Length: 338
Ligand code: SF4
Image 1: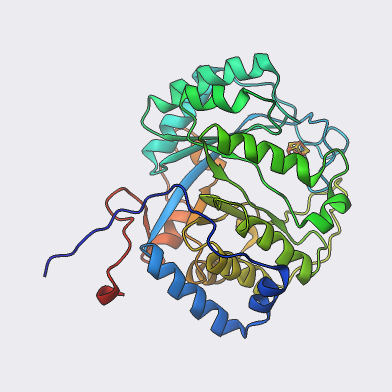
Image 2: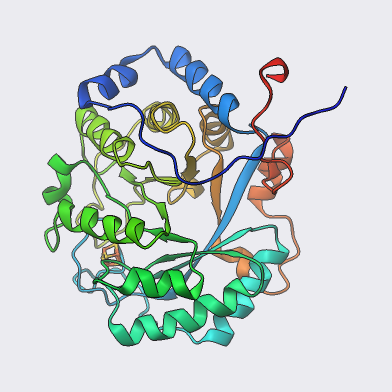
């Protein structure tokens, strides 16, 4: 019997259902295994559940950031031992992008620790984006708050995605970050959409927010119109020296619930396991994939030349019979094949 492949289009996903905080909270309250089952069904209706989108993240400018994000070791306000690194040059970045591609990544994400880029930074970034794009990789940038016209310049250079997280629930925002507002984030997200860039937008859980605030965080993401193409869900990595170093521990089931709720409320978005994954057991990660996560960040260590050993991500994917997503395998299965 012939298999019909229906290619999945990543943009845009119109927001079709309004998600009130109460409605999202009710999802969180669903019995755990029932919630996972429901999320798994939504996952299968929209994606090939065996395919995992692989992105590689490279820090192209590290540390010395003037912002005060309570979770971030790159803030200049905290003593965390992070070594400051000025913006790398094009050749260094292209070298790493080539390695990422050879290891199966199809998207190369570049992060710079700025409140926002200056016009001279944008000029340099356009050069870098063009060079990475020429390798045949999708490009993503996370450079902070954008001024008018910057998103258009990045798009023109070939940037595919812009990452700009809403971080947490609007009600919890001021407890985590004082140097900007939730609305500042929405303003940059609006500029990014207007310029025609795809949006990668998520946040962090485990920052002392309560369940209602977690529901508010997911509702805020799900009500973006259109919904983000990629939704990174990070688990707080507690870093000594940051204000959230002693944040209350979050039970693993609550993280998995958050993934499942993200999948149900944003059915066509890639839900990405991001920061904090290194601290998760294989079993917990498998549960997240069951609950609808279908994208991961490959670690920086993969960007070291000559690293030919299988890394823990590849080992886990092999154990779970998962494969890197390609244009050929990212299909929406026909109902009869689910
Ligand atoms: S803006 Fe980014 S780099 Fe700067 S402190 Fe916040 S999270 Fe860290």
